[in-house]
Image (cartoon, rainbow, N blue to C red):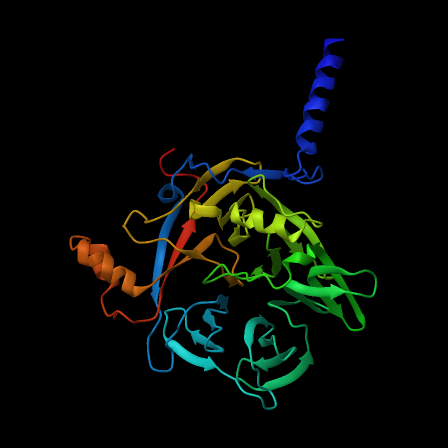
Length: 385
């Protein structure tokens, strides 16, 4: 009898929690991990798990000067960097030596007016022209192969049979109902929408800064995520989205039918806008997020739900700033990429002349040189255990 009473109490408690308007619904079919954005938790520090493997100084020339890194791709040993403002892709070898630039800005045949994303598949580079609503396909020798129609999207994934588009906000499916969607897939004559969102978010300005990809690709597998949605999705070869990792960051959530004033209240409350800089390490996940005035936080969590750390990362063991950015890679390893601006290092060194490691990083680098990439290897067995 006491077990029945206990069970009833548990059911009533659960019903009470679910009944609160702003609580996330729990996905019973998938492990859901709750991240407290107001908590700083460090079971094992960053430096016990991530070791600096190498540093790549991107060569700076008049032809290779990068304004900012909007997308970073590693493909067959080369480094591809998209700078949206310049509408260019800069290519470096694995040592950071400048190779060439992909630049087809213009209004002629085979040119784009707004390069917002690119994807490399089978030695072909797919250039997404958002405002021109087209995909330009070139080989790696910069020869035009074909031009295809595309959605006015933020990002593209090239799948086996078709194209997946992450449009964030602004796409409506009026054929069935007037719902608005963040995801669109097209294969020949077949097309469908997924991931409906609140129509009052239309026109919302959304940005997470440098190195933020809407799609992540690692060793042939695509992942994607959407604003105000704490789920990482796996993009299957048939274009369907499947929840892969569910992270609930805080208790606030924008519901599909919320009114504009409610959305504004939630935004002012500091709701988490998106997961970004996501890395999948099989048994662990690493990502970052912003929440209100908490600043940028980084999370390492095991697939069993254990949070290893949920904290702001400032500098590593060598007092080098940490700014982890996303990347696509064709190598299946446990590496994350951090980006350094030389001017930050110079400013730091001016006040810390005794830091020999930072001094060595600045060797051959100018204040306005290209960013420096720092590679950290993840070891799930912390050094201090």
